[in-house]
Image (cartoon, rainbow, N blue to C red; front, side, top):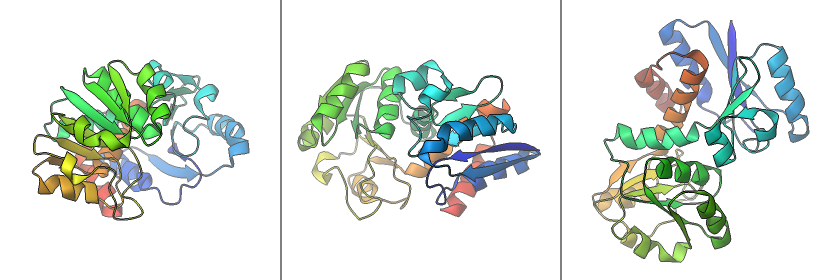
Length: 264
């Protein structure tokens, strides 16, 4: 039996196990997807143990996405983003970042062209992945963050990117084509990081928050006629990319999506 899993702390809330195990069942793969919750101090030992025990691959979540970077051989994209969310243990442990593909494939699934101007709200881990993902597609990226200096630091690394504060979102989104909320605003309360006055019908809005699926930002965007994409699509496609890295097989996307949404 093959073993894959998720490493983080905490991981009890994760909906990745049913999503991946539905794919194994669909394709007849003898595998399980389990969760591991080591302490931060034992992360290196945990990865060594996983490798020694024959674990095929691990997803990585908070707070370890940056901490695992020096413990694996990161691919160029993961190194640029500065975070790893997928580890492949075939040979020397290699690190990948599939969050970027989660962003682009979520837009593509909704027939949204990855071109023009994109606004990324947030400059943390999800914001970094979204900014690099869009820039690599040729999108002119505008990064807006509460702490402007953090947005400036990210904009220096991302091609064709500029940094802004949150107070200028109306002007930033005027004429923009894409919007990604890469913050957690909307997860704990019915709040939005973007005023509705800044939204318009020509915008495609991806909210990385997936609990709840319908955030205030997405409701506001739908009200003005914008294309809306909930965070479960990003979660799905980062998982699809990880599955395909590990198995070298096409993922059963519809089956994984059904299992994911049933568990939310």
